[in-house]
Image (cartoon, rainbow, N blue to C red; front, side, top):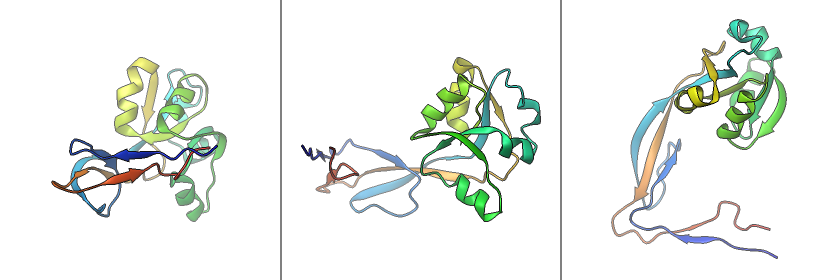
Length: 154
């Protein structure tokens, strides 16, 4: 059975993305700038040494699927140890909070969850860079239809 998801985009709809290009029918506005940090649970045995590149790379990581960190590391001839792959940063942070795994996540998200999940945010041993998030909202009068990104669900 194949289900197709179609959603009308109302004039009140908004999207948040890191997209640098315009999206047809949408107005793009800067939302915020962020960077990434290394996150571990409080009491993690290697937390004090996580600024060391070798310690960072040899620690067991929660990797978020589809993110560019591993590509950037490979371009520098480096690899990290991946213990678990998850589809979202929120799942990565939750896994870190319950284990000795480490992850590389957006700083603003980590800051918002650090206290409730007993996390430590550490500066990464690599240049995390900065990126901008944008809000997209329909242009006035635009007739828009969106389809589920996969096109269908099985």
